[in-house]
Amino acid sequence: MEQIHDSGKNCLSILSTKEYNELYSNSNSLNFEAGELIVKKGSPVNNIYFLKSGIVELSLDQAPKNQILSLLFNGEFIGINCVFSTAQYRFSARALTKCSIELLDKETFTKLLKENGAFSMAFIQYISWVNEGFLNWQMKLKEKNSAGALAFLICEFQKNFDSNSFEIPLTRQEIARIIGFSKESVLKNLADFRKEGLVDSNGKSITIIDASRLEEIAKYG
Amino acid sequence: MEQIHDSGKNCLSILSTKEYNELYSNSNSLNFEAGELIVKKGSPVNNIYFLKSGIVELSLDQAPKNQILSLLFNGEFIGINCVFSTAQYRFSARALTKCSIELLDKETFTKLLKENGAFSMAFIQYISWVNEGFLNWQMKLKEKNSAGALAFLICEFQKNFDSNSFEIPLTRQEIARIIGFSKESVLKNLADFRKEGLVDSNGKSITIIDASRLEEIAKYG
DNA sequence: TGTCAAAGGTGTAAAATTACACCCTCCGAT
DNA sequence: ATCGGAGGGTGTAATTTTACACCTTTGACA
Image 1: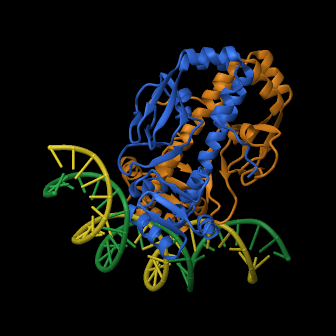
Image 2: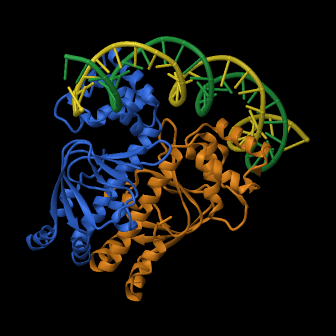
């Protein structure tokens, strides 16, 4: 609502051409296929991963429920809190779609933060925005029942597409792990949505038919 | 585990005497009684609240469940993400115990962040650490059943006291809102803990009797 | 092309949680 | 002193969610 729109991109755009070139001359471009592991939990933080395109999931990959923490879309840094608060990544990152990633050098990045006050302020704004968003996401999911949580997730995905028809690059099991309910609950709620004419779904492709009622369930369900 | 120990205090200690004096000459000291509202959701961010002593709860104070986001202990900033990501506070802060708070001037704080690279790096580390901690807290609670979540909360409180006997400055209803279960679930689990000889409780005072079993429930329950 | 595993899907039983009803106690205000 | 509300507490019924069992579809690949 009153949230300031921000992203990792905006924050990098503060840099001067010289600084930008310095950062990118110490960086590498990497491509990942859907399903590939990008960051393994516990590995040391040597680089900063900037997601140029694609969708990434962050997960704790540990017993017992292997919850998915959050999803990242393009323009975001991957696990930016870990870079400055711990020496190791505290979760794993996996590509859900084809992903293009820029591996920025952590030392150069840190040097620029120290030297350029405007950049460090923009970066502080960015991580505040990311964490605020994560907090809201978690709180919204927590207060919902299974139908509401599923509807909420579908609506959130829709925001990243132009059309009401799109693909959710997740299995039912993965959706369950994101919203914190069982696989069967996801399937049953999805079946209910179909029966009630709210959405049409076939495998990973989904079409929202009655957007306003779906949003209502997402909000109050 | 491998988490770097940090706090708002450490981050302020980076400042030179001159900078520290500048920050504090533009600040006010405030005291709050238990139960008093410190920050109202929606109010503009003009100052930065530094919690010198006491315990504060952050809540969304909105329908339907009025969840409590997290608890802050001394040495923390209150709602530090909001200061740099939005113009308004996105939650309310309430004193659970007597609290002593320093109201730092936002403009002076921002100026120091821009001018002092070491301070801004320490601040970035601090907010990363805070958010990492929040994320872990939420994830740990989410994967637990009602008994596990209650045991976890009791253990977390214990960490802030020297003894196994202490006061939890929350009603049963508030505990319920923190761990995301109903008031009755809290009461029933607490009764079970008493029956099984894990804890002794009387109103707000609680004594942990079998710490290892309680921790086991907190971990695996 | 056939096979096999992974994913989608559904009904029913079991388990966990909530909601409701109701009680008691404490404490502040009239 | 007593009234009334808030908080603590507990049993039972209703609801929600999960677990299990089982079936079908799909797609990779030998």
